Image (cartoon, rainbow, N blue to C red; front, side, top):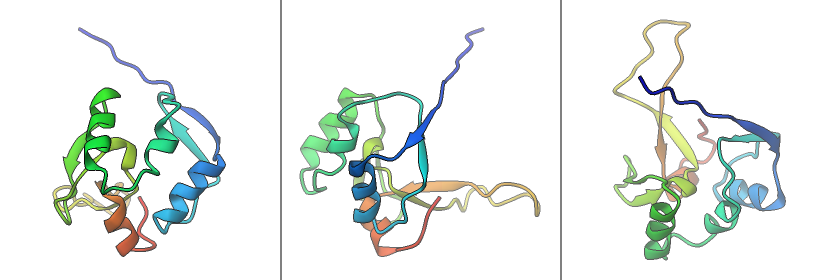
Amino acid sequence: MTRLSAVMTFGPLSLVDKLWYWRCGMNAPLSQATSREIKSLRWARLVPMRFEAFHEAYAARHGLFWLPCPLCMREYGGHQYAGGVPDPMHPPAGPLSPLMYVGICPPCTRSRKGTQC
């Protein structure tokens, strides 16, 4: 049986991270966690979404997802993940069970200002 593990690293946000949250219309958290450090990730997600070929190639190069947004069906990559909406396929089982979220693209996050996961 294969055993998998991940190490999460917590740290403060850089200026580029804060710009990303501002651009998505979200309040920046005090810290963030990552399971792997991709040095170019912070800068790559600031590239406008209209450069779709760049983003698709970037996601493929770094093993990140490339999926359609569940709200607008525009494809986006794991490096562009911004916000989320409650997952209709996994409603909470009870009052203390966690609410599951589905990721949405940056334009949908901006249009739903204040929506965070």
